[in-house]
Image (cartoon, rainbow, N blue to C red):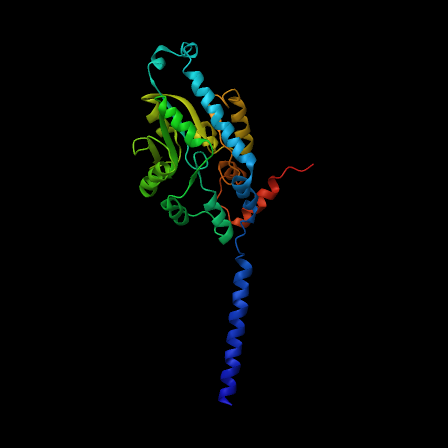
Length: 275
């Protein structure tokens, strides 16, 4: 009989364990990042995306060439005419393509996290965005200083970033002109470092925060309003690259809150505009 009691006790314990395990699974649903799939495929497989990237850099080249026209220089203040030219570009999804990292997150159902991101950037495998190398090297050949202003981590990613930019063909890349995040995510202070010595001809990015702090932490409606305020600047001094995978546009939908993946899904569904 003792063996029978031991057997029944084992069955009871096992049943409780299994039930408890199912209860935990029910309260902690698996992460589902499949909603990002179409965005990543658009970046990787759509010829339209490539066309938009080429278009952005073609427009940038036309605006840079126009800036060298003496007629346009006369419109500037005398002090600005004497300043050397600079172009400020973001890095991720502006000049380097990180879609493989996003794709890996979807496959493994792993949301963005610093550990995986650092592992990706340290691989130094990001490819250039179409048109980026040709345009920026053209600018350098014209004597323009290019500054890479990114919110990559200065302490953990700087050398890998420099190496990656060089390996895909960008010229004139060094610690001096790769300005990464040291403390604050706002890029105003780093842009100010550039404007202290140079006249910024163009700013290029995939996120509104890449252009001015006027866009930072604004609601969806307010971001629309801020874009409209400077509508004549787009395609002239401000040039945007497409990025449907991630960005502050998505954070605005979440009201910049720290939410679970389930809560984010609810916010996205609620944000859809229906007929």
